[in-house]
Image (tube, rainbow, N blue to C red; front, side):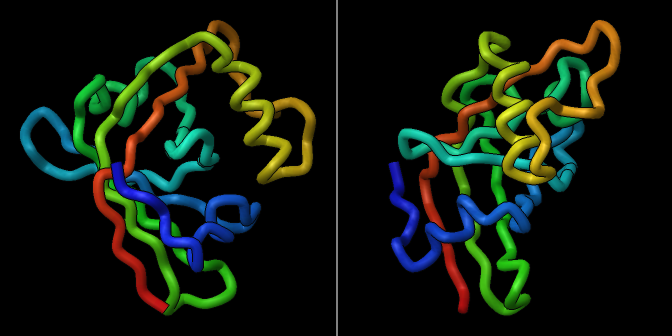
Length: 132
């Protein structure tokens, strides 16, 4: 497991820093989505609704990459290449609520849809690259 360089850990908690998550489609083509994220126990965690494209692309063991751009300096970023190490629906709603708090300052995720099932994806960093 790779560690996030200390000089870039501020990006992991910055409520203005979004990650661009790259996954691989079944046909081998890349798919990129901006996502909310957090960092816990050395892993990047993202949350999505079951059935979305990125959810279909991520299974345990899938390779992914994230690019996190410093919102105050476009020439500073952190790239994380990793593997999806754990997937769970347990705590999914509470996790998306915590991300809504981080990014929107709201206690409850305001965009929930009826019947939506939230899923947490834990990504273990295997390599990092930084600039700036």
